[in-house]
Length: 227
Image 1 (cartoon, rainbow, N blue to C red):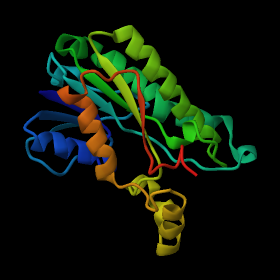
Image 2: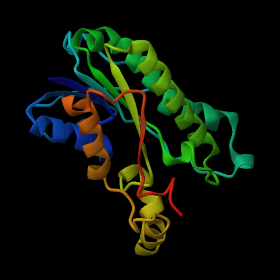
Image 3: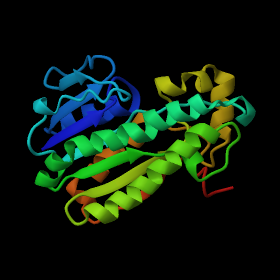
């Protein structure tokens, strides 16, 4: 099968690409920086703002698309500028819209699957998350709308992680004190790792998830529902 992963330089996107390749699939990646692992992986430079995806290098049939780019822009509301909101909107939401529109014919041809990324903050109120939570909430609305519009040809789902140990979250997990505090906020007494999230993405892309669409799957250590 052919899969396109947007944002596979590191973290969750990179782990998804490696998992799919290990399963024997053809994996195409597009990201800001070069993907350095896996000689069989096709990769191209891609900027979510410019939307410079080279469609000519992508096969006519795509069994799955994963859009991974995100941001963690945490500020008090009174310090957020309209440009902050716009930047988060561009990276998290509009970038996904542009990519989906670009490869929709290929996804329809293969009756493929789309996996997007929300955040636990989209539905669970968290201080200093106004900008990124708003953008991720838009992703959840997009997921449900597209799942309805594209059915039965294309399945569309989203994953809403809690804090995950990735380079993007490095400042939030910079030392043992921060890591301990982050773990204690979760009922499972730990924060996420890339495998937790990548495994769910790989499942949602697979035939094992053929009866799942229009869902926002929480992979958050129980943070959103348990107290």
